[in-house]
Length: 106
Image (cartoon, rainbow, N blue to C red; front, side, top):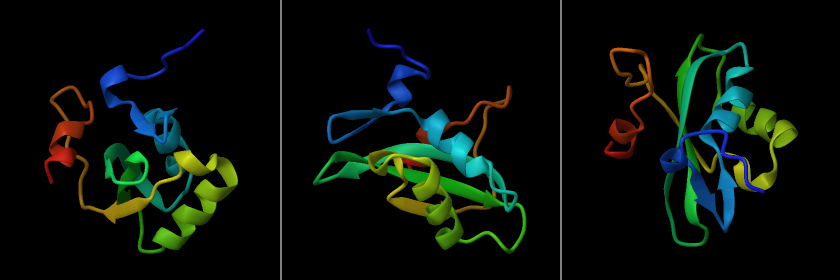
């Protein structure tokens, strides 16, 4: 049986494995130095898609190195972000939902 825990259109397919953005976002958001995070799939030659995290820092101590280390401890290899980009604000709808399409179009 397959249990879908996120919107299927937001699901990321990495080398045949399903990655749900919410799972990766929850792990990264555990860090105190992170204010917000949004995860999307981006095209990748080797694995169909790769995980990319857009991160809003809570303070200046947030670093790519810290995020990578935390993900390495808490996520299986294929679920870890291959790319991390720091941005000032996560685009959201009027009701507060992440506008992943706007992130994909960046």
